[in-house]
Image (cartoon, rainbow over all chains, first blue to last red; front, side, top):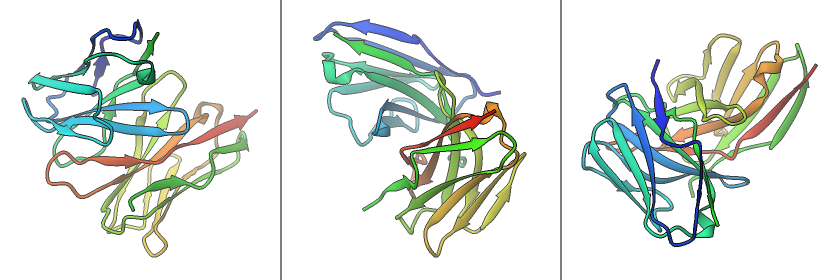
Length: 112
Length: 114
């Protein structure tokens, strides 16, 4: 089975802190994605990557950056956390030619 | 514009009944559709997919129907069980040269009453 893991299930940070969310997948997938999920707004794509060191902006990239130095790891960075970034963050991966995505369990981030 | 939406935000059914969850999409260029299930406290899980050259696909207790004429997608769950209680998302795959980005609907919360 494909496994996508996220570094934390729950995280509490203060406004202005730099926050790192890590995602690791064990199936050698080329594609990786970061989403945030908010009530009433569904899943919104922040960034995605289709190869090592490659990244593309999603629908809501403002306030976020990403890093993909290794194929199995995709990191989401909040440069200066703000309260409106309180959310559930979901990472996903998929192999090329198959567009169904495999999701991690999510990180619930609270920014105070 | 592009959007993927679900007709109803909530659906309540009796255990043992069949459930039908609907989804409308607006991008006629979409060529691949996926249904996901998200249980409380977990990430979405793939249930079933369908390509635009098909109009029906069956899995274990689930069937997806695609009507391209009216841009409508549905997920049918047979003999619904308490373990089927979850949020269900449809996703529309937008033609993309690389990563196979999807656009997700808002989700329908299915509650199964014993």
